Amino acid sequence: MSTLSSILLLILGLPWSEGSSRLTLMELNDLMAMPTRDVLQLHLRLRTNADASNMYVQWFLNHSQLPIVVQMGQEWQLNEQDLLASQEQDQDQEPEQNPDNRLNIAMVTSLTEFITKPMPTSRAGVYFNILEETVADLSPDELMQLEQSCRLQWTQHKIYNRYILTTYGIWIYDPFGRMDNGFGRLVSYAGDEGLPTLLFHDMRGYPLRVQMFKSVYARPEIDKETGLLVRVTGLDWLVAQMLQERLNFTMVLQQPDKNYFGERSANGSYNGAIGSIIRDGLDICLTGFFVKDYLVQQFMDFTVAVYDDELCIYVPKASRIPQSILPIFAVGYDIWLGFILSAFVCALIWLVLRIINLQLNIVRVHGKRLFQQALAIVVDTWVVWVRVNLSQLPESYAERMFIGSLCLVSVIFGAIFESSLATVYIHPLHYRDIVTLQDLDDSGLKVVYKYTSMADDLFFSETSALYASLNKKLSWNRNLHADVIDDVARHGGKAGVSRYLSLMLESSHYMLMRRIWIVPECPKYYTISYVMPRDAPWEDAINALLLRLLSAGIIAKWIKDQKSQVDIEMRGKMNEADADDNVVRVLTIEDLQLAFYVVLCGNLFGLLGFLLEHAWQRITKKVKATTSRESPLPNARRK
Image (cartoon, rainbow, N blue to C red; front, side, top):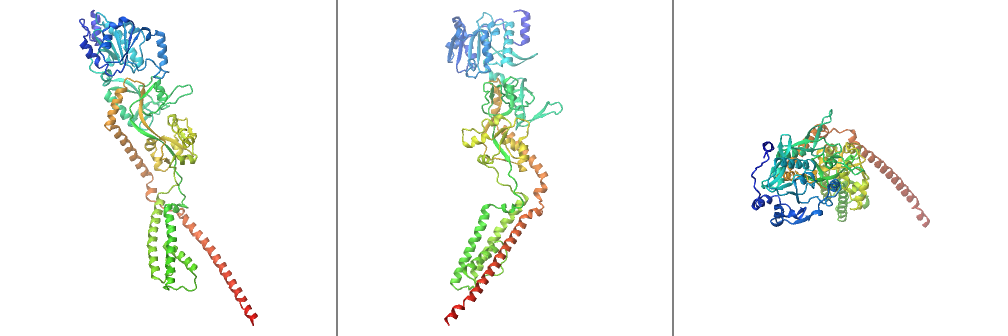
């Protein structure tokens, strides 16, 4: 070995020994145990029959317990142009249609073929590249060539789960190994752990491109002058910091995309975070996505579910009941109905007592017929019922005691009415709100949404006639920066779609001010996850850490902390702004409108009663006079 090669090898940190020995069967069993542990099926690709004599091929065929599919020659070999063409089409194929996707492959190649010919580029598979048996171990120059080839495949396709099997040992590519000019080193594999565990528990400061845009739990702050990202706050930022700390990578924050989640254009391309992932411009997006089909499953994967949420419909709050009729709505319809019916029932009981007393001669009423007494009893009952004094009590003590009980009941009803009136004048009442999706459909309001991901499966027309009708009322607001909630609260006339947590955390002041109302019947429930490129190398490591955070209750605690902070801030602001209105309410003449209306109506009814009584008296007198003049005539004729 030349002195120059030895020095270069020492600089790169690659172990090499001029007297390296061939691997024994026992050593091979130990080295191959972990790499093949999670392999369910292996495709063994041989160029010729001569490759079957390779010691690794013999091990796979005779000593491993793997289901093996052996492919020979033209069954799998593609010329360079065909393979490149297939790789260009991989991005447009479904995962099931791509023949090299998610396959575990062991293939015999020469060093030159490994370096120069295209290799499978799926990140999901495990690859065993078996180099032709050689008399001597790989030289430093050959190791450098292997390292450069592996670095190129990592840079372009993020391929890491590859084992280079040589006669004297196994080599792997560590993408996080530090070098003077960057990352990535070829290192000898000792067989202790699988590559996902071995490499990704410590990424040693490797830069990951992370994006977070405005959402419920992510609040980026942008410099108004430069338009650049200054910092991010919220739950998603806390999760990002925890991931960065535990996995030891460098978080390179990307500018929040103005298109947020991303929309599909007419030509089939995507913008937003989804478009960035498809174009390999993003390593992970730490803003929550609904777990659903975005029609990009061949490009994008979800992490484990981090939290959940509902899609809800919000509508303008029902209008306030006018002051002129507010006392009517101070109590419920059941109390009004009970108050009125009880009065007539009590009048009937009083009339029964009067009839019994008349039959027993306990009381005697001269000059009044029974229907006249009944009318007087109804009037007197209502006089007592509204807590007004009677001008004269009946002679019967039984009736007097009954009147006393009426007074006690009227006091109870009066207390209910008075307390309710005081309450509604301080806290005004509103008409009935929309509480069901059927009410929403009957209202005729159009439902506005900003993100297509919120509406594409919100109301399935095939589900029911109600959903079909509501689906026709959906309206897309293409301005992603429009504040639909504020528009609904200020101008009304429409409804909106939003996440429940977004309304509770970001727009709770509208609900406290009774400007918007959330329909209790929410049409959709989703789990929410972060997203990353499909089969990203760090997917397992990030999912494992997220599961640990979830099982420990840390993310749930952060969510509760954020909710509590928002509640404290909003309550404080509302108490300061509405202290005078809510605590001390000065009544004005407008609050007495109904009283004047009642007096006016009472006077009108009194006048009508006076006219009717006067007319009745005149008619009665005329009838009596006519009768008295006509009655002597029969007597005169008899004489």
